[in-house]
Length: 195
Image (cartoon, rainbow, N blue to C red):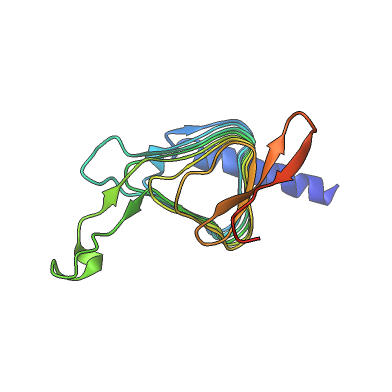
């Protein structure tokens, strides 16, 4: 009974405290301890979003006032996830992100003659993550990537290029190693040329 009361209290605090801070806050938000929120008014959350402790949701508009982060319904985001947006980043419904995941839509400038990298202007390209995507522990999703629907990305992968629907991917750079076959209702290994 005490656990249920504590859970209800956490939900009420989340609703009251965060609902007015976000651009949109759906029903049943659960927010873990010590989140880092930068420009939460540019963050739009669907229903039943669960964000773990020590997570960072940061929107730093570049040269646009239309910067935003959109997270769909039923998202389960573990502790220590870092999402950094300078332009536009969209995450579909039913996201499952393990701890330590990093997702971004931007990079610092990379010219060695234009001064320190940290002081160079950000460049950004829209990053999109489809619905029902599971990102394993410490996955990095880089700027300009589109991940399709029903995708699993294995732990420690670096997603630097697009991934199609219904695949399992891992590695650096992440590449599909299995594709879901809807005829046999099973995962079919992909030939990589390295077997």
